[in-house]
Length: 440
Image (tube, rainbow, N blue to C red; front, side, top):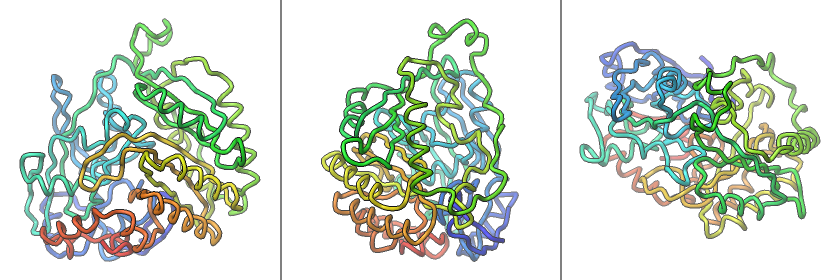
């Protein structure tokens, strides 16, 4: 079948099997040359192997929960949405969440996802107690910070290239309600935006929608959204009657793939101007439902179709704090000068991260989306160069077009990862289209 990531680029013909049992997985692993796949929400080719891709969504059982500690044990194919559905009404919420709830727990582990609270809480790995992994010999190994430590460390963030993640035990966090106390700060430029992040570093959640179409004094103007879990005492009487609101129904669905010309520098500029004024019209603290704060795009079905039949690429870099201001300014200037427009542009503050192969570093991360065309691909190559000059690196869960030379120049940890894979005898077994493209 034709297989692709959420960006619909690249599209590859792949053999796909959906095993039902652990024994099926062992038998397939012993044949080699395969990769595990969750719900297909990685943007590129990290969960695609043309020879054999294993659909893990049938491994979708929540196995155990400790009400005292908040530790939940789940199979890798369980969706984050299912975790929220089951445990939020009981007063528990994921400690770290990406921008969609339609990811599997196995995928969250393999890419070590981060969220709007990385500056305080770190990535998902900070809350994983142990994992069970099927290695290249077909053996199941329990891995933690004390047991099979090296395998544990390289698996988290290792994009499925050390083995097949079977089960994960991770900690949820206590919350009183499903409401988020949100405050939106409208900024005038990049320096102003970064200052808001730094001044609000105690805010549990922070993220900025950034207008990358503006130039000059307005370059980098943003809406910074600060958030925290609301307590019952913070809510109105009506909100207290609905302490844990259900997710919004999908009232909208993109019915067809848009023509490629719909997203261009003019339509993006018009949208950005309208959104900057409309969404930033109120600076008053408001209580919003958890679903709207963390997953605004999940309410729009198939929103990736707006980028056209060729799909889109997401560029996401992390820049260390020492050079973040200059690097971000260069990137935004390059984007605004190009004929390409980024429809979804997000800026977040990262805190320290010391996992062997996780993406975040102490600094800032910028995410940009571009429809696939020759001009946008050239632009992203230029953004790669800027990132490298400022000692930045790239997020593998979002990558679909980076070259091996750029990847290896961005991250010296790759050498150790490759050696670890060879030592585990995983190199010839667990292979993705991305690992072949990037030569790791």
